[in-house]
Image (tube, rainbow, N blue to C red; front, top):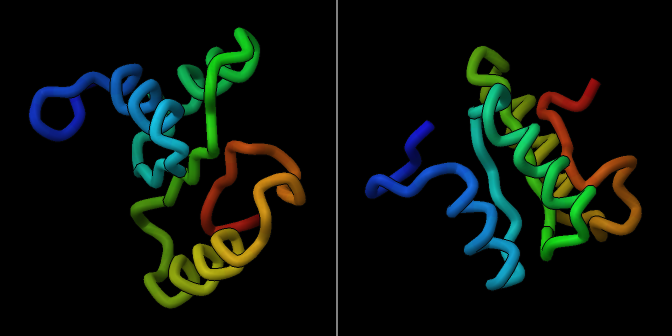
Length: 85
């Protein structure tokens, strides 16, 4: 799938890994497997948050704030899903 400005998802995660950035996306179907592949291969990866597009905005904002304030080392997984279940 293509991201912003024609970037494919793998390119976005590669750029984010090189830049030390966390990625937030709605794209559960393609971003998630690419993220897990990067983890398995030991490539630079600084986290992915998948946000459910149908989730209530207030809940999404609360959960995002909680995740962003928590060091990624304390997350259950470097791939998180919002709303947090």
